[in-house]
Image 1: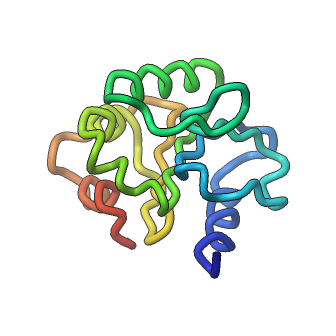
Image 2: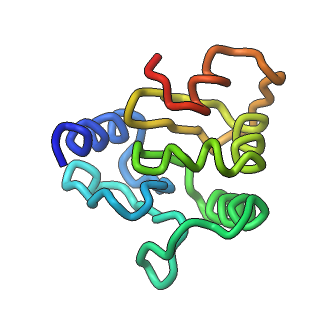
Image 3: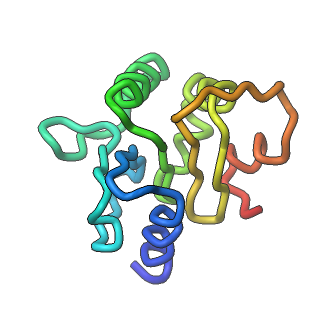
Length: 137
């Protein structure tokens, strides 16, 4: 797996508080790292606790996201294997970008804070583009 997998858990744990729940979008390719053992991870999408695959459409992705947020998920984390989601699911990306702050945009991770709604005008803020394409900022 190389350094890609090792840097992701450290960056995620730096943002979370002990006991937090977060959503991990990684196409089922990353593992649960011991550095993240103090946090509850929801694999996106999951069925019976295991990765179930990508959503069929934007509406499904948004519905699952909002149900997870209502259940206490405080972040959604896109790991590098799933960066394609940010281009393919235009409706999901617009939903995230228009409602939640992009708190981390690196070459291997893009993270949105789901704790509060934050409106960002279209095209404003350097993270608007960075979060979409996964550019390291």
